[in-house]
Image (tube, rainbow, N blue to C red; front, top):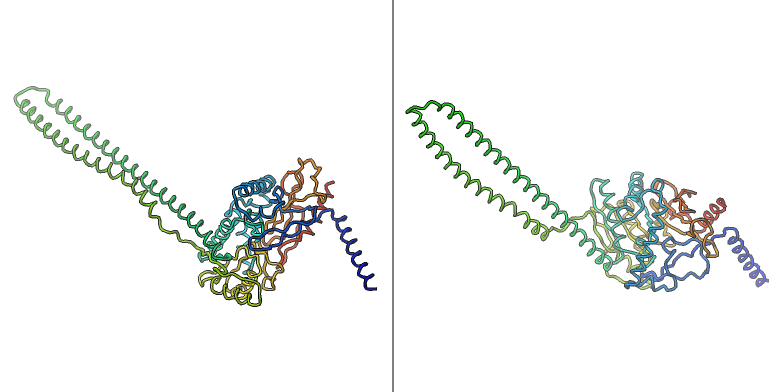
Amino acid sequence: MCEIATKFLLFFWCCLANHNNAVFGFTLQPQRRCLSRHHVLEKDPSPSRSIIPIFALKSSRNDDDNYASSDEGNDEKRKENLDAMRRLLESSWNTETMGRIPKTPEDAADEAGGSLLTARERGLKLVMVNLLLPTYDITQGSSFYDEVEAVSFCVALGKIVNAAKGGGKTAIVVRDNKTRHTVTRVLEARERSAAAAAAAAAAVEKDFNAGNYDEEDKEDEENDEDEENDEIEEDEEESNQDDKPVDSKGDELDDFRKQLMSEWSSDSDDEGVQESEKETSKKSKSKQPTSAVAKTTSSVPAPTTSYRLTSMFGDARFTKGPDMFDKVIQAVSVNGQPKEEEDTLIILSAASEEETIAIRALVNKYEKSKTILLVNCKMDPIPRELVRAETIYSLLPLIARPKDGGSNSDADGGVPPKVVVMRRYPRDFEVFMDFNNNGFELVETVPARAGSAGPSMQWLAQCVKRQMDARV
């Protein structure tokens, strides 16, 4: 009897699954599972997919190693895939309804920063940001994920918060010291280069202004000499008019005038020598800023920052076992603690079990005293400490395909419909779609709630089906 009941239940679930596929017409790509810290991706066992990340549209999935290697060939492939994704988004992006397209970390931070500041004003201190573009999403593997760009996004986001508060500092937490050292070297090199360029520009501007002052002084001196010569000529004309009658006294006056002129010319010669010496000294001084530029650029002071990049675990390594919990807590208590003056704590790309344990400890300790921001953290299931966390900004681009995997027959050149799911606090989750390359348009909204990262893939599949059926 039990065997019969079991067979009946299996048959019932198979029928229900087939019915759902027939009704929805669209299925979802299975969620990628993190198998290691390198995030090697699990192959999709299903032969058909209908909603996939937009950056996977033209990427090869024949070999999982492509996502974990970083040789020259894969770097070129990565660049091609990112460029393809960027073109797909930019060709349909609607800035009026969707805001600025996140081309750079700074642009993305500006968009997310507005939502973060609004959330702070309303008293939210535990928030999440999910910028699910391949450059910032660690679950896409090293061929896509760029840890420097991800940290740059956090740095720009921290600056926005600090500027709104009129000061303050931010602690940005990555997984380990290896990541911290790699990112620190790149960011410090960028900051030194920017500081050197600014110092060189200031020195050139100073040199240019000094040259302008020399030219103005020279023009003033020439004008003064012209005025003096004009006065001399006027005096000579007047004296000539007075000396028209010729007598013995006139000869004496002529002799006296000649003596005055000879003395005047000797004085002017002396002044000319002095003026030439002045000009020479000025020219020599004007050449000095050129060496000052080199001196300034060679001794640029280390830039001061409003953030501190730290690691969650330092150099600690963990293996699963009964003592892993205690080792994680010990490591995070030594390495991942924010300082007293750092009132904003940003945790970046936490996606492992040990990182989830560390986040729970940090939230328990600092939830009431500091603003905690989780950027692209993947925790499944969500721990109870984060049930109250609000997703204040989210961006997820997708591609919708027919269930059979074929291309669309719409008059769009074979390009499948594009989907973008966004959340900008305090708005709800918004679903934008582009069916025929006319640009994204808002089609549906989903109420936002604490602890939710957005609508499920199943709901999105139904949404795509509804919208496409309505346009038939």
